[in-house]
Length: 546
Image 1 (tube, rainbow, N blue to C red):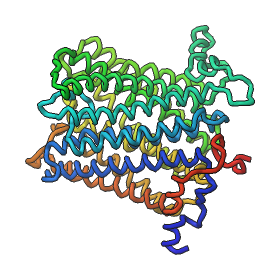
Image 2: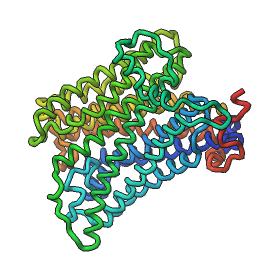
Image 3: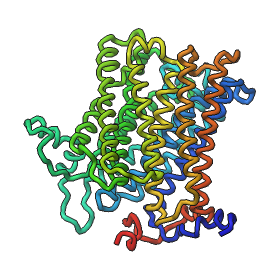
Image 4: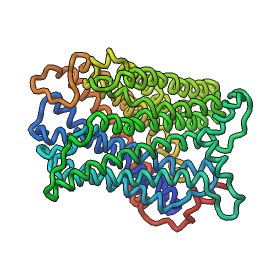
């Protein structure tokens, strides 16, 4: 085949969108929009990296901080949420061996998040609404800096994302518990108890422990999806509540009434908001990632997960820990009670070394037991994801020390070795591993166009992600603050190296996009958005299941 033919019709004409089920097409739409928003985040990140090397007139301060506000939100809600929700919307019925509860709800979830992310991103671009993603009170309602109409549109976009998120939560629990037509009634209470770990907790209370055999109604990955979704629900509820509070001030301002921001206790608000926001970073991400590691390790090796009972216990422990660790973000707040700093901020946070360490060990042990293994794309990216969290979690635990936090807080260290390495290397490489696993399933066996490009994707992403985090961290240790524009070039050498690392990430994305487009073909990619005539309840074509 010529290059032009491959570009138009895909590698060896192996992708035929007319053979896809509605569920396959829907899942691919999630992946496509996730990748588009990830590209948004990469472009914004590179522009800000360049600005840190040499401040640009195009990124004047108001635009820079508006971009700095939208950048993590686009990355989290646009790229990560869509990829995770899309994968789990397909995998949950796949693992449960029954149809998805509601195809329409899955469609609404997709479009609410897609439209919501674009709404707040475009509003920030036009109005320069820039309260930063932490939304510390009273900054979101500071109408000396921001126009209330622009802020209201921004918050409305976030609300749309949260509405889509709550629909995903509903989908997960309804798919888990409903009984498809013609089947024996599902034991709802026992299913929920097993998925949430309540049945295991009851066994521990009754002193039966974890060593004795227990028959589980749901698989380990399903348990991880369900438990992570608990944090998704809590997080969405808290962000929606905060959004309603902010919107109340904005609407009042629009209609000529200025409400007193002092009516809201800033420290109480900060604790409330960080409790919700940390359910993403230290809750659903770590629980979802651990469950994905277990699933990937099982699929790659064809074996049961090593120490599966302990893996379930660790998932439950991580869920509980995620509800109690938020205060490590407030260790440098002078008004924060010392008991919360020491208890939640330091002691409980240290448990994440145990919970995530267990997940890390169990996954590696599962892979080790199955050696020798072929170094496939999914295995390489899984190992890359493991490495990312192996670097980022200890970096975060270091920050959860009151003494070190006084030095590291609000420096580039926070967003470098911890945040960017966790998200770009740990989370994103884990998601890429899942993409490489799911691609032949979702495309009915389409053959990847270029293994060389897949290798470029892997190495450039791994080196670029770790490099960016490391050089940002070095600058932070030298005193470079986050959320600050430096005009004197004091930290330029570090920022040049971070920008080069960022460029590697951009090359990795370009390699991945090229490979996917050449695998599917432009006509095939467009065909994903056409209507499927196959039954909605079928995950894959009937002949593929047989």
